[in-house]
Length: 270
Ligand code: FBP
Image (cartoon, rainbow, N blue to C red; front, side, top):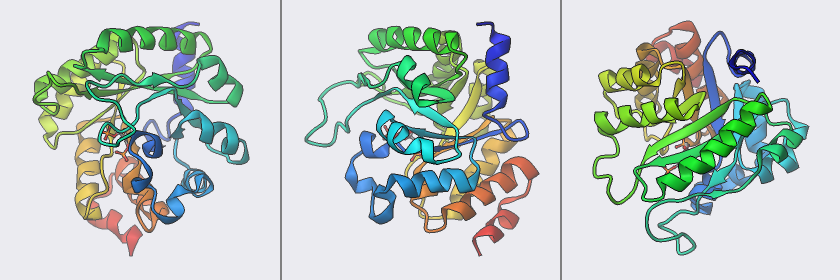
């Protein structure tokens, strides 16, 4: 399929040219400690995605297959994942996620995009990149855009958030053919702009990170990234672990789509 077709599919993952994805694979990636109270209920999470009108809800196959049909939300199906290495159930050594879903199955489930983590710097990166090659090519054959999580990680990686490593990661993601690059923001706008520069046509979205103690501080990051020209955000815990997730989504959209500042966006939470 030509890239023009993929570009048409990408438009369906945007609102006014920008993207906000809600990510929930932390039950898999981190463990039950992330899923306090109602956040363990997939219906609660899908409800936030639908009511919040995010551009896609990111989840593993189980949630997508058993719950997705009941909700009006685009699904970005995460097709690889790893168990938390800090858990007794997790593996030792550098990360090498399991491929957990085929592209064909994701298409059957109705996914509108595919998500895949590339741990750049892992001693297993050769295999991970080769797995990504197959996924990316098959997804594009089916007309599905592909998002790559680009996380510098592995025992050789001493500074995962350095400008050099993030910029290199962005370039690897672009040259591997990922349509979106879901990447950390290290707090330095000039470094994020460099990630965007290295990414070319690949669209850089900021990864949310652990729940911030202060919504204001979190929204300041959102504002900075929006001002850098980022495509958007793929946020999990800072939305669904918040007591008013839909208000947080509205605040993010105010900043992202209507160029409001943090202080006026915070009114959504009053
Ligand atoms: P958050 O916004 O909650 O951080 O989610 C983004 C995400 O990339 C998830 O998709 C993934 O499960 C998790 O972060 C990875 O976390 P870690 O950096 O601990 O591997």
